[in-house]
Length: 78
Figure 1 (cartoon, rainbow, N blue to C red):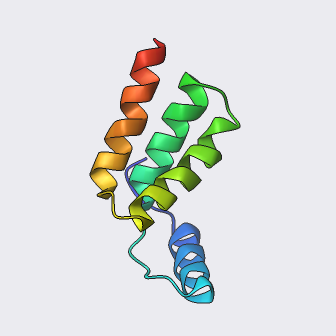
Figure 2: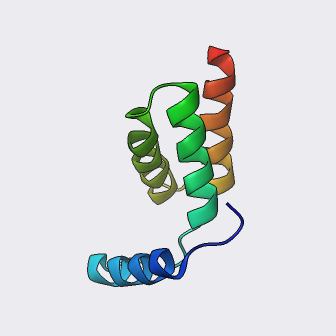
């Protein structure tokens, strides 16, 4: 995925506002890692992993590091 569809951008902005969070969502990166988890672990693990990434970032872990941890865990399964 190289571009975010307008509907996704609009949805993300509206949902962020409704939830009272900043609208600086790294959509493409989150979709990519969610797909990697779904294919590398099991499909239901995708959205749960994305949620856990969000929790980790909220607790102070840099986003890039959270993504790297997830990808390392997938690689460990191979």
